[in-house]
Length: 121
Image 1 (cartoon, one colour):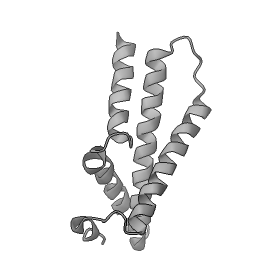
Image 2: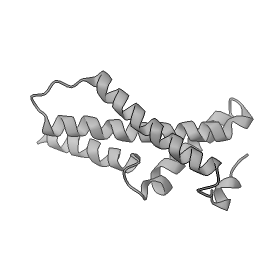
Image 3: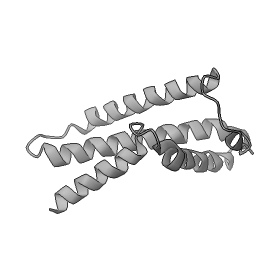
């Protein structure tokens, strides 16, 4: 029972952090990325945007990896986990997603809301 609860929690939290839900960015990933970006400005004040992008990417990676580990733990009890492969899949998927979203913002296909562009220190 504890294993199913743990696996379900990993899948649920991972889903909220992953790029698989359309609403998650506003409520989860973007605040995490902005906090990360502000934290990076303590090291170098002009690194807000790169820090925000890295924070966004890391939150997506974390979500995908959490979902993978939860699903493997819940559904494949006899299968040996290949942690390296699972991490690479999560890293690759989140990186591709973040690059696509960053390119869409960079080329003005997606517009950044005014309240986000005003947050830059």
